Length: 307
Length: 267
Image (cartoon, rainbow over the protein chains, first blue to last red):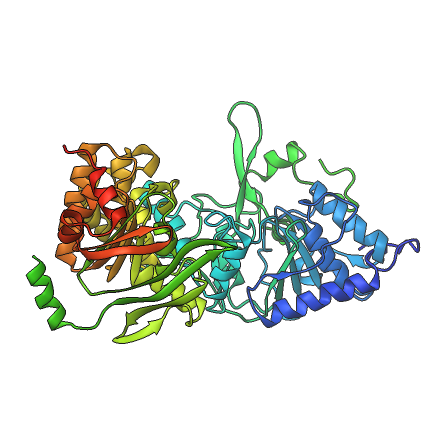
């Protein structure tokens, strides 16, 4: 584990203390009303909006010297965005970072929930591009607020109806809308619907930040989260015909990886930490040797020379 | 016909909709002023007048879309008259989705153009809380058939439909939750004469079969004669004459109504 150093030119956690208090007030309100979108004064951050500024501001408002931070992007700890955000917090707060889900107190994520079940006391921070699940149905913000206020959610089912009418099943695979605590319809951000069931009754606190849209929402621990569906077309998640090519897991979300220009491909865990952990415990997938030959696996701590 | 209506009125004497001195001002300009009338279940009321006479303004106030400047709209709900603009907005919106419907002149205002015909009709059922795909689809097919749209067009989008079909689809969408009251703003506007005739036929059958009350705004006196039982003539925001449709059209009393009826070309 690294022992980074807090750059004294920056306030701890980058944001000034007043801004952190503003964000925390929004967070408290969001937790008090599960699934409700709370407006907040989103700040300019040293990266473009749409690159995770909402999640970064939440993490910055929460993080303390004793925390251990994990950052994932598309499930992986070693992608560009994850590495950049992790380095950012190492520099502006000096907190410890980790890739192990169980060691982290705060996990900032884009597009995935870790495969390993989260525990009470952990906080999952999502980066949210579009917080409004009703936006595709209704362009007016004033109108969507009324629809939320009075739980007028019939239109959400039109989306599902259209999918079934056209494809025979609900073809929405990510950002699949959920009903939180039996009250607010919420967009779970672009996580695959595979992860939707993990949100239900989760022991960890889930926080959502949309920097560009200036909204924060939350799911408190042990809150009911139900994916919308029809009685005769119940909610289902994706499944794969083969296990992970690297670690042979058959319970994880798999990404397709192209291995050559002759149609070669394999399916591997999108959660890189989960996959490594399984391999360390001796699980071997049937294409692990191929992947090692391609230098696709073989992670180096520090991150700079990952293939 | 009229006698039957009188008989019906005796059977159910309470009006479904009452407007009392309804006034809507746009700044200094008058939208409509001091409009009062009652509408009984199963009755079709026509509102005629030239463009700018306040017909659409009146309709928007009656349907709960715009808040009138003065006066009151009473709607009979659960056997009690309720004042439309005294109840909370969510209740009013719920009534708008379930108890009455609005057919817009332009189908694009009343339809979701990027959603299939079945989705458009089914949305009102999903609003109501229906969560069974098979039943929603069956109801959509039933209603599309009733407005003479083939079952094979259920998954097509409205933009793939002709203007007349779009208007019939809009009518299906409005009628599927089985409202007790329907507002129509120039339902045949922009359609050619033969399509108009079929649409009028359809509306007449539907309104009579379902026994719903309707307020139809039109500038077309032929439409008014075919569809309506009673007629109100508006000019400059006020009602200048009202009565049974045949009476008003055949024996107009007010100078403006005389002008209006004489302006119609004999076919």
